[in-house]
Length: 544
Image 1: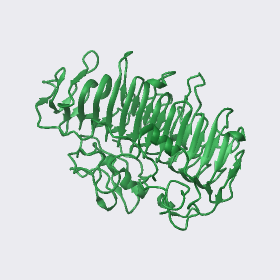
Image 2: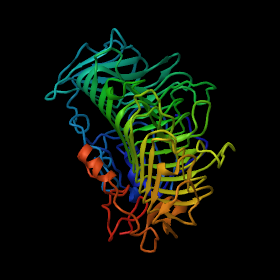
Image 3: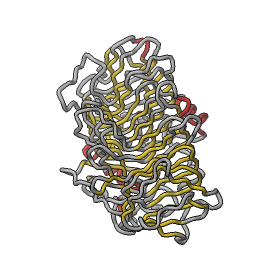
Image 4: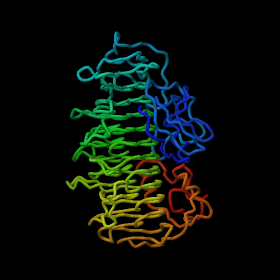
C-alpha cells in the first residue's frame, strides 16, 4: 500500500482492542497490544493479512501505512490482551477455527485450479496467477462439513485475475489479490454459497477504478449464507479523489444474503464505503443477520461503515476515522439511510470524522424499518472541516446526526470534543430516546431538535457545562465533570471522582438485544460488566 502522509492518533486504549486486526504473527508485522502481547481474533492460530499497522503503546499512535506483498506466517493464537471476538456477536459454526492439513495440490498458471474444488483438498497457489475464474468459469467448492476444502496462497504469490467463488465448505486464506500491469485480481463470494470463509488475505485495488470484495447474489432465488470474512485487508479500491460517485466499496454485501460475519478486517482508502450493506429498494428482508465487529475502516471516500436496505445488522467494537465530506458523502464514520430495520451500532470507537454516526433520509416508500440502536459508543474529535456547520440546521456536523430512522435509542454513549452533540429533525411520527450519555467539550448544542419536542425524550445524561438544548428538555440530567482518565490520549474511562457515577438507569435496549440475539450486552466497550455500583453510570464506561 502507499504510505500515508502522517500517522494518525490512535487511542492507547484501542491498542489491545484492535491489535487483532494485524496480529504480530510469524513475520513480526502488525500491531501489538500493550505490553507487547500479540492478539488474534478467532482461535485458528492464523495470522493477520499482509501489511503492518505498527503501534507504539507508549506514544498512543499508530501508523496505518502498510506494504503489500504476501500474507504473514501463522501466528501463535489468541493472546491475553484484547478481545478475541466482538461483544454481542454469536460465533459462526464454520470458518474461524479450521486448520488446513498438508498440501494436496500445487496450482500455478501452467496447472490451474480444478473444477470443482474437491472435498478435503488443500490447494496452494504459487507465483503470479493470472487465470480468471469468472462466469462461466467460476470456482465451485465441493467441500463438506467433515472435509472442507482449502485454497491457500504461498508466500509471494499474487492473483491478478478475477475470482467468483460459489459452493460449500471452503476456506480461502493467505491469498493476495492485486494489480499487475493492466490486469487486476479480485474476488467475490457468489450465491449459491454456504459455509465459505475468506481470511488472512490482502485485496488491493488499482487506485483508479477497481478493487474491493463482496458477498453477493446475481441470480433470483440463489442465496449466500454462513459466510465469514476474517482478518483481511481491503484497500485502495477505486480513486478516493474521483470527482463523481464511483462507489468502489471495500466490502459490498447485497440482497439474498444472510448470516455473514465480517470480523477483524481493515478497509482503507476505497472510493465508496469501507463496507456497504445494501439489498436495494424494498428488499430489506432478503439481507439480514450481518455481523460486523472488530474492524478498522479509515480514509474511505464515503464512510467507514454504512447500511441501506437490510435487517438485523450489528456493528460492534469497530473503529472508524479519517472520513471527510466529498461529492458523494457527508463524511460519517458510520451510519445508514433508506430505513433499514434493527441496526445496532454499539461499542464502536468513532473519531476524526465530520459526523460520528449519521442516519440519513428514509426511503419513504412504505418499506422503511422502524428500530435502530446506538449503544455504548465512544465518539470524539468530530469537527467541521469545510466551514459548512450551521447551528440552526439538523443536517450538520455532529457526534450524531439523526435524520432517518423512526424509533431511535441513544443510550450510554460517551461523546467528547465535538462540534455539536446530537442533532435531529424530530420528524412527525418518530421518537428519539437520549438516556445515560455523557456529552462534553461540545462547541454547539448538546441536543438540537429541529422539530417536534414531543418526539424527543432526554433524561439521566451528564454534560460538563449547563445543558444547551433546543426543543429537548432533559429530566434528571446532571452538570459536572466526567473526570475522564486521559482524554488527550482518548482514554474516556471514568473513576470514583466522575460526576457520571450512578446517575443513569438500565434502558430496555439491553433486554431487547438479548431477546433478539441470545447475547448479553450489559458491558462496557472493553467487556467489563455493568453496572458495577449501586446504579448504572452515564457514558460507555463504569467507574467500578
